Image 1 (cartoon, rainbow, N blue to C red):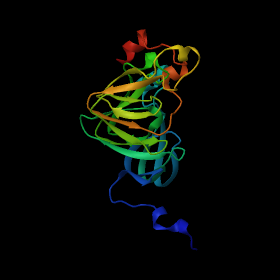
Image 2: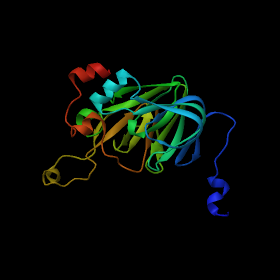
Image 3: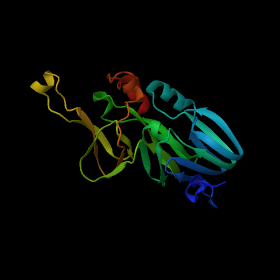
Image 4: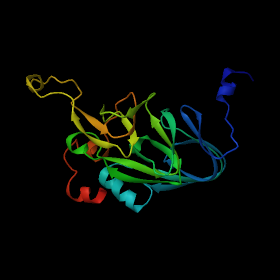
Length: 243
């Protein structure tokens, strides 16, 4: 049987080392000898002796935070020996290696899989949610290991070494040490009263030293603020719980 389908580009890529790696731009391959964490429902194929265990959001504490915030990652633990292939609606997949001392703040909807050596928690995005329809909360990953993130289209990585402003619906992830805030993108005036708008009412601001990953697509807002239509809900109990 002959076909361009069977070209070397489409054949399974082999590696001598276990771990997460790209099969292609839209497929993640995990060469499994132990365990890793993955988004529920992301498996598209596997070979070998592999077990899948649903974890909810990764523990009772994270489960409660996810219920309160709408943020988080519905997880499954994948363990055994073999090859596992993962994807998420044909989104582009990118690998990020975290070293001790690194921190990555990421929209939970863009987490595909990560090494079980990494730690993550749900944290409030400071200075943004009270004034926007953006999600109030993000997943923050720390530790040593690899994480696979998804984007809708090819992203741009902005180096934050000067004031940087991003549409919050296009910001996928950023260095957790960056300071975030709110920036009004258009001035209030007669045009605004008449219903004229640029569509850029506000942006997220970033300052410090680090990076921001921006995708060429604006996703609907998620998290608590998205579910609540952008109403103020960041005070009281929630502020105390997520500080």
